[in-house]
Image (cartoon, rainbow, N blue to C red; front, side):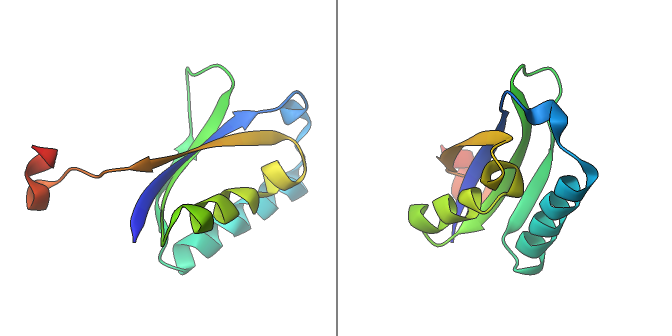
Length: 97
């Protein structure tokens, strides 16, 4: 599996998100976690226009894109996303040296 980063960007109506939609968002995150795909997620602070970030695993870019498109904030039009692949550095690969 490969690692991907999804930046969730605020749309013009982002501040109108209701509790029911937040609950759908959390359910979506829980599903990624239950499927063993979630690495890390959370709200961002101090980055204008960016609401949050999800770092996850997927088999390929097409699957990663499908995961992003299944985000309730995106489906409902409150947010857009940017998707990046990530080469993870760790002791096993000498931190990409």
